[in-house]
Image (tube, rainbow, N blue to C red):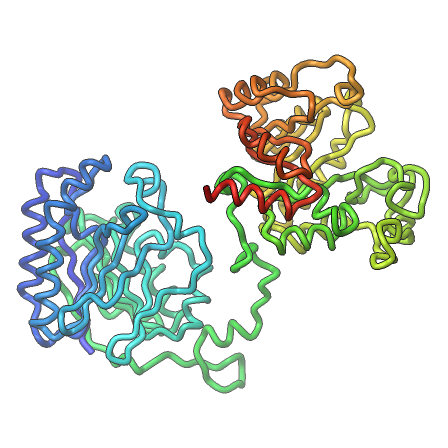
Amino acid sequence: MKACIIQPPYSRNVADCDEFFAYKLKCLDECDESMDIIVLPEYSDVPCATSTLEETLYYHKKYIDTLLEKCSETAKRCNAVLFVNALYLTETGYRNTTYCYNRSGKVVGHYYKKHLPPLEIEVLKLDSDYTFEFSEPYVLTIDGIRYGFLTCYDFYFYEAFARIARERVDVIIGCSLQRSDSHDAIETMCRFLAYNTNAYVVRSSVSFDEKSEICGASMIVTPEGKVLENMKGRFGMASAEFDVNKKYLKPQGFGNPDGPHYQYIEYGRKPWQYRASGSAIVLDDKKMPYPRVCAHRGFSKVAPENSMPAFGAAVALGAEEIEFDLWYTKDGEIVSIHDSKLDRVSDGCGFVYEHTYEELKKLDFGKKFGEAFAGLEIITFEEILRKLACHVIMNVHIKTLDDDVDYSEEHFRKIVDLIDKYDCRPYIYFMTGNDSLLRMAKRIAPDICRCCGEHERVIRREEAPCIVDRAIEHGCEKVQLFKPFFTKEDIDKAHAHGIICNVFYSDDPDEAKEFLDMGVDTILSNNYLVVANRVKEIGTK
């Protein structure tokens, strides 16, 4: 099999666009029947660097029809499989897309770039919603050969390589720009990719200058990491031949039979040692849309509050958020329970913080809810994170002895350390009515979202500063309003300052609708499913 890579010139001056686009067409005209694979760079429809969406779309619309027609004609004329990257308009917007042509010149597949950098999301406004959904690696089989794909920024996410390897792809097509990395760095990435996937890597990019040591580096690499061709800064075309069926096999450990590298790695893989991942991962707190229903203390209508059965039921039913409370024990463990006293939800008595964790574990935290839950133990914050980190947004209510009492910095840092242990910062927000704790959270973990809660003395119908004013003062991203002590004017004021509004609480779907009509963003509810179904019903009308 013979693969051809095309590396055209590229510049920051859009005045060069016509000349550089013509160069690509000329290269395609020079392709011949000896070639089995032809690969062009990313954004082949935009020949030079653009700075705005309007400018980008101008050149896309100017060249796209000519480009695709030429690619189709070339694939058919050369009896080759051809891959070219350009914008593609879908029902949800433009996407960075690799078009795949078979030997008859017909489009047989589209690969949508999986990882979009800030430029493509914030400036070019490309559709990116699909990148937040679970998806398998895109694999296209043409003439019995399995093709995998990476586009530019995708090359950096090496944690995806193991999943691609499982698909047993033969060739990985890389349409790229990568305008800031050195040739050596790009070669390292490509060799690492080929070695870890046991696939041939065929990468096409652009070049700023033939003497430049950055950008460029279109190359062809074998599964053992051997570079058959690296164009570095050179303009033009290059090709290499290889046997696509010849893979790299190595001993699966000293004295063991040969096999592919990724197979050996799979034997010892320990997923729990890495970042949370997989199909159960949800959008983080900044990306999860509103309105939401937050399962207050879990689905506490059907299972004991602040328990794994309550949290699990809520998450299994699709809750975007769960809320739970944290107290500390006498020996400094962080546990989930609402009251400072034990008697309401367990067969114990006294205060949580007067008992050690081991003493609390001996108590029954389920029987008072119902015999079916008899023997349920108190749970720790770490147990919640271990099961549900990154699977749901967590409204973490840190309980304090009094709103005016300083919270222990040692205990707070332990909470933050546990969040970091389970890589869960983007999925957490702290809720408290304690102003000193809000200040501490802002100082120690400013990137973890803070939600200003109501003072207990307001709940006791005593006077206190307006909760929205306090949220503004502390720089909180959210405020948790306590019914009936708020008005639509409070909600409007919060929104005017970019603050999200929770309301505690509503178990009545009609009342929940009233809150949504007022502008509330998140409704806390003990009766999760009934309220969530009403919110979804409203959202579909």
